[in-house]
Image (cartoon, rainbow, N blue to C red; front, side, top):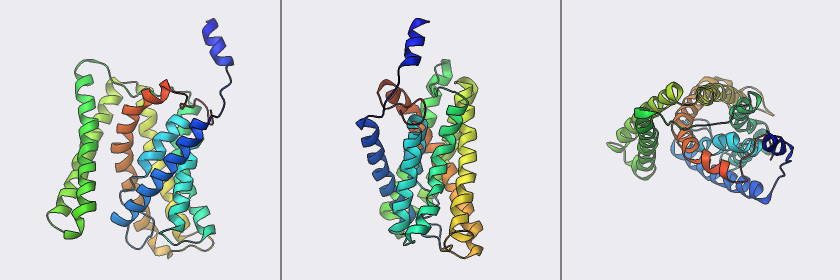
Length: 267
C-alpha cells in the first residue's frame, strides 16, 4: 500500500528520450506517408493513401506516449502536405489535424477510461494461436506492400498478389483481434477496437472535409469528398487492424519497461 502511494507521488518529467523518440517517429512516419501516398494513392487527392502505413507508427505511439504520438501524426502530415502534396502552409496546417486526431482518439480513450493497456494473451490454445494470427497477418501484408512497391508498376500478377495479401493479412489480424477480445484483457481490446473504428471515421471526416469542403481554400473540388473519405477510412482500418495491432502486441511490454511509457499525456 505504501509502495503504491509512493509511486503515485512520483512526478514524472519529460526527458530527452521522449523528445528523441518523437522526432524519430515523426521522421519515420513522414517517409512512410510519402511512400504510401505515392504507391497507394487515392487518385485525384495528393497526400491521401488507400493504405496509409504511416498511421501504424503514430497511433501506437499515442497509446504508449500520449500527446507525443498525436504530435508525430500532426507534423508528419504537415510535412506531407507541403511536400510532395503541394498544398499551401495554411492548408496543410488545417489538414494535418486529421492525423493528430487519429493518434489522439485511442490515446484519449485509454487515458480517460484509466485502462492500463495489456495486449497479451496467456491462456491455453489462444496463447499459441494469437501470436500466429497477429504476426502472420502483418508479415503477409508487408510482403504484399513490398511486392507492390517494387513490381506493382509491371501489373499482373504482382497487382493481384498485393490485393490478396491485403485481404489475407486483414483476415488473420481480425481473427487475432477476436481472440484477444475473447480471452485477453477485455478492457484493453474493447477500447482499442472501438478506438480504431472511431478514429478511422473521425480522422477521415476531417481529412476529406478539409481537402474538399472547408479550408483556406479547399485544394480539391467538393465532389471528391466521398472518394477521399472512403479511401481514407478503408486504408486506416486495414493498417490499424493489422500493423498497429502487431506493434502494440510486440512493443507495449518494451515501452512499459523503459522510461518512454507515458501514463498521462507528456510524461
